[in-house]
Image 1: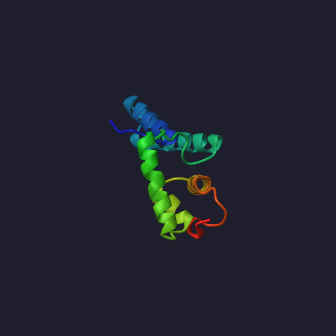
Image 2 (image 1 turned 45 degrees about the vertical axis):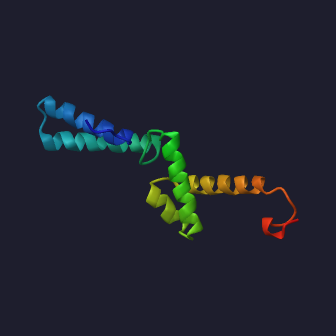
Length: 115
């Protein structure tokens, strides 16, 4: 069995299967299922309606990779596409990283100044 991360795709597949099982022509069943999928996407606004939450360890790995790509001067849009996340997620990960770096440094000036 395939896992679906996209609710609309899952609904379309189930509906197509149910209509085919009911004896409806395969092309008509596919057309009906695609119309329902478009309605679901239109009603709930977007391409991906349900994205399964990833484990904490996988999230940490992903975030480390995002930071590494960002430090390597990759554009944020490219980072988002590479990790299949929204650009706002990339921005949040970078912002959280920078906030942690700021909290670690409590002295005056940069850490290289030795003050």
